[in-house]
Image (cartoon, rainbow, N blue to C red):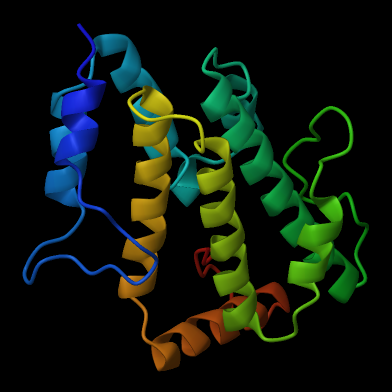
Length: 198
């Protein structure tokens, strides 16, 4: 039995500036969703959650992710992969490295928003650029679920939006700029062994 209507009706109505109740975080919300999913849907939710873990992202992950039967999730992973590859290409160009170096894998055909992504990554302010990337993802989630009301796509889009909200709640402007400066220095070889910040 599908619990989509019950799950969706129980979720908070989040916006980009939404905040968790004091002393709380995303954990109870994700636990609620997972606790009410069918076994097959739970696998899809777990695959999505795995994509937020930088350590798990490699070509094998994306090959499996792009093979999922769920149309929404497949489209999301195509978008995610193109965002990451565009980011790598811009870093490569800035460091005068081969453009294909460290690319995960290519998706079939030309991505529909390639020009838009190039414009975002041309932003010289790194914190502004990250905000614009998340704004782009948020808008795509709205677009991809505009005709969905009580199905798994709405739940998956909610989890992606929740991840965006959570990420920015953990950053104030000063901390964010410091983190992204660290990323730039790492790429330039100033720092060694620093985990990639995303």
